Image 1: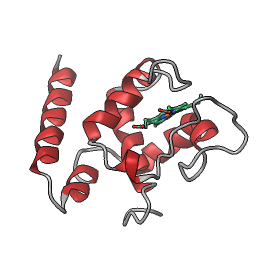
Image 2: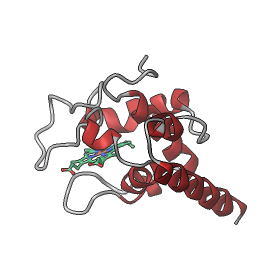
Image 3: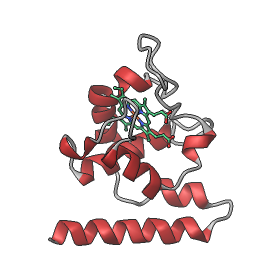
Image 4: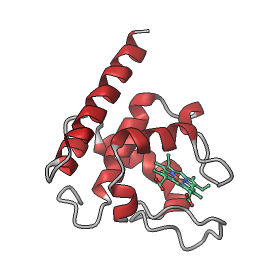
Amino acid sequence: MRVIGVGLALLTGILSAGFAGGVGLKDLTSAGKGGDSVSGREIYVNTCIRCHGIDGTGAQSVRLVPAPADLSSPAVQNRLDGTLFKRIHDGKPNTAMGAWKHALSDEEIWDVLAYVRTLGVGSDARP
Ligand code: HEC
């Protein structure tokens, strides 16, 4: 129960940060949400890289229709954390993107999302 409460508090915080809008939005959404991009990187390498590729633009070896989303693209990076969290958590119907809620805890999803944020084009956090 406590975990759910914390999750909701996080989500509410993110949504309100998102609606605040403005230039600082990306900083607000990528920082301080508790997601650890270092453990997120490990999750990404183990579970996401085979479709989304090392830099998020898509693995060369997979032929999927639709193709995996380009996680480095502004189209994806401009989405709110809550939206991306839901995508990873629940998957995307009729695509190869499965619901990771069965394999990853909410905390792990926040971690991997923090890493996905580092894949953004021109992201300061890019390693
Ligand atoms: C089996 C291949 C596969 C794996 C593994 C996979 N994805 Fe995906 N992913 C996809 C496909 C396909 C889409 C949908 C592309 C589309 O919307 O046309 C997608 C979409 C997404 C989106 C939504 C982008 C948007 O348009 O908003 C996110 C975020 C994402 N993936 C993150 C992840 C993360 C994080 C992992 C690892 C936990 C992961 N994916 C693992 C194939 C995969």
